Image 1: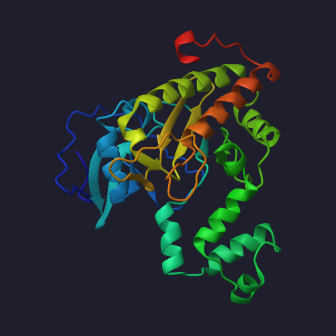
Image 2: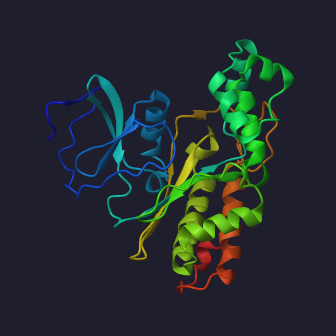
Length: 313
């Protein structure tokens, strides 16, 4: 089934029942280059992360399963382990894709604590900060020419809609175009609406498709035991559509999704105060749904069917 460069690891059983799918390049909009490889049989290989593996194993048994990539286990290539999952682009023809990071923060509480206990100022984070705003670093940070990762991340979020709306656009790519990733200062509701309109090319049918999917996702999340008992940080929604009218939205990136302590749950809408572990995921999803809904009367192209009442609540 696989060439000699690949082998199963961690006791993963062979995948013998997978139906071969057409080859599909994985379009990486943002993130670390080299983290992904296109696998065989319509799969995607992502550099192994144990926490992410644990999440996917739980998610395969949760009502959230239809809203995440199907997970197949761990494979090894050139002595590097990878999590194997569905390549979500396989069923699309020259798709447009967007990465939207959801939640009111992108760092774990334990990262803050670790930064206090073992501060490690980073030059690369300082350079990123100065590139956006030369006045942002403190006098001490300018002297060191370095900033803590958590300091950079908290500052970064004040620039974007993460703090104002509970989500931010990381980047998108329309068919046959370069990636658009200049959204670091996209903060206001109007700015976000303009960026989303650009992504969907003012097509109401596409917006209707996304709204149906997002409302279904919200219903599932509000009843999911996994979601109720996990802090979901740094996770994204992957939006995909093509000119056939097909649309899809999936939750991806669970490397910072961690189980809550026993007897602690979160509602994902309450404002975060250090110690309560709230992540603002549903607050951001609510705002995203509201913005897409408000866009509909402003768009000109395409007709969309009404959203069924049972998923409009």
